[in-house]
Image 1 (cartoon, one colour):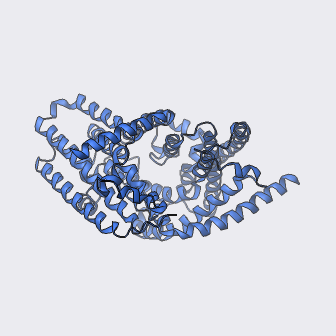
Image 2 (tube, one colour):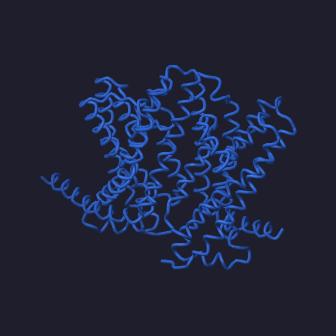
Image 3 (cartoon, chains in turn orange, purple):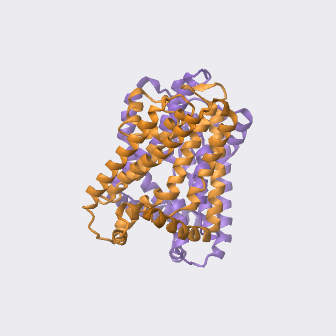
Length: 260
Length: 272
């Protein structure tokens, strides 16, 4: 409860700051609309001569992109930007201030600010999901929807864990480029993973669990995957979170507060 | 004579800046290596996606063509990419741009040198990855390689870089009017990606959309060099492409000059 209260206060303060930069906010909304238009254009181009790509039809792809956009942009708004800025804080010696917070270093580093102008782009995800629901409500089941929602929450935890683990390497060696690499690799979650080879899919379900970001929630929602995958998602989320916090605690010991 | 001296001075400054920036880039070479690998991932994703489209019955699009296309996307995007948009817009926002106004050379010479230096290191680091990919993909890659095509490809890549350089610097001037440019910059990058043929090879567009895309300058930043080497274009299409590209280059040059002259009057060197 304490952390939730602290986070609500952070969101309140951040909203005031975000809305002071009104043009930035509006330009990000325009960008969101434009990105959604590009995504729809790409999907229409892909499906112009076929009904199915690797077992995914066009409405499944819309849903996949919707879930990916939702997880991606909400994450950017809530913690991704903060984790990206760890490198800058370490280099300038400003990270010390976060270590003094009574909330613990992980919370202080990851949730110190909320970025509405990034999170607002998640509306594009909600739009695609709503579009799918209106066109395919007859095939959806209550258990599938509940399972899908749980899998989406697990997706947030997995996304957070991946970014926390990679961001923590800034304590060992800043300016390593790992966050950029992770940012590119997580884009694989926005396409049907069945297009990749067996080995790649195996990795995406295990060592680098990006399949659980969007593909698994979508397959659970549409009833293609059984509800066992909800349990797998939760287990992977728990394991990845524990691993990322372990990596964080191990690497933060290397932080020397040099600055400059 | 004066124009010759100006051009010589431009390239002299660019060369010095190139050497300085290259030395600076080498300090963080591991970060640059990660950036090179990161930049290659998106073309791999889109290439894999389009290969699946081909295997799903879109027989007009041979799989080998798609693999060859996206292999070249990784290379050509490094050859034509420009980074001055970040440097220029950030220096305007920080209030740093004033220093360029008192220097005895045009800031574009510095940006040109920096852009070339970043590109040099990224290409050096990319070569082993390209070789590994080439060996792995082997006979799935095919190009229309003859002396003429290779020369036209190199020429089109240079044209693409210069067009991209001016596009980026024109867009960077927006920072004189609007300080909150992060969102706009991201929008610009996405616009270039879609219109240049990175997300959808222009060949797969409908006739109407293809006509529009071919008239815009973004095609020359990525798709045009690839189309030449892939053998998609006959000589008269290549000639037309070069003409349109050259025309765009002239237009962008004059647009830049006019916009800079107008924008600099608004500049008060305030940093935020």
